[in-house]
Amino acid sequence: MNLKELTRRQLFGACGIGLGKISLASLLSRDVSAADSPTPASASAGLHHPAKIKRVIYLFMAGAPSQLDLFDHKPKLVELEGKPIPPSVIAGQRYAFIQPGAAVLSPRFKFNRFGQSGAQIAEPLPHLGEIADDVAFIRSVHTDQFNHAPAQIFVNTGSPIPGRPAMGSWLTYGLGSDADDLPGFVVLKSGGNLSGGAAMWSNGFLPGEHQGVAFRTSGDPILHVANPAGISRQTQRATLDLVSDLNRRRMESLAVDGIRSRIESYEMAYRMQTRAPELMDFSGESDETLAMYGTKREDTGSFAKNCLLARRLAERGVRFIQLYHSGWDHHSNVEGGLKSQCKATDQGCAALVKDLKQRGMLDETLVVWGGEFGRTPMVEASAALGRSLGRDHHPQAFTMWMAGGGVRAGQTIGKTDDLGFHPVEDAVHVHDIQATILHQLGIDHERLTFTFAGRPFRLTDVHGTVIKKLVG
Image (cartoon, rainbow, N blue to C red; front, side, top):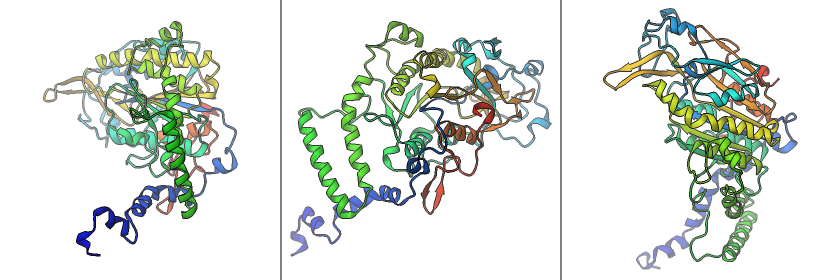
């Protein structure tokens, strides 16, 4: 046949390989590698050790809250206000926007003690003070990254480079999900844009079903799940049955078990069409519960509403729920910025812990709060950039807190020097945080691996130690 007489469709259909096969090979490439990779020990032989929790709710404060103004009270900074940091402290340090010799900035708020533990918490966090005895504070966390995007990706995936699986992806890969009609890994966002972007909830090189699913807080919670106009439930079911049958035949003919994940993803989307609207219907929540969170039924997109939604997701068996709230990057007016962000988040965070506790869920849920790094003891000021009384990036020390999930609450772990610059007691690396979260779920972080590009990978790379003072 003369090639000039062929239509494009005939040409593709007549190819020796065929466009369809090329497309199928591309779509299944990651699934094939997943099928060839060793099954995680937790999936094939049960947990590595008894799990203390069923799920994690991670409250990620993107932009890096100032630990010196909220959690790590340093009277020495008041004494040195306006003076440069001693050279011996800052030797060899790099900063994003200030010189190492910038003047000291004292804490912007008064600190008070709360609970029987006597935890020191700054005034903008009164609701956190109410649950101080349910919380363990870690004041000595440090990271390897000092810019937002790589630091945020590092906390979430164990690597500063995009392309690695997120913590939630590792957990659903290792443990599966208790939710039949919702994703095992759900993402909720508020406060604006995120420097790390979608790389923070990516499945990376793990099979696609472990991707974090970002829920919207208004309209359809997940895009492209609802049926188009004119397509009935019956028509959709018949279509899915036909597609599933064709996929199963292809799976058998190619002997590629990875096609199964494609079939499962279609079925999950079908089940979510019923569950997702019910999930987003807050009409059954009491007025008292809404008031505790500081939200209303008609609210959309607020952090407080996301905290309540996180509890509802936890009730429905979702394994890993990640709340991202941005807006903590206070290079200028750290005092005003913290007041605003604490007002937006403090009540919701405390209400989530209280609510879980009231419902008997806190013991089986680990709540984690923290950002990507801390802020400097020195002031950031720049007439050219219009900045004053701010703080720069500080990876050497910052504060996180955890509640529930077998955590030894009512204590403060770690200590920094008099300037809040370096940990001097019980230093905790980001990989230690990751290892501890996995440990609470019954996973040995050194044994949960996935072979990709010829070598095994894990969330904590070749690092990480469980924080025994926290959970031991």
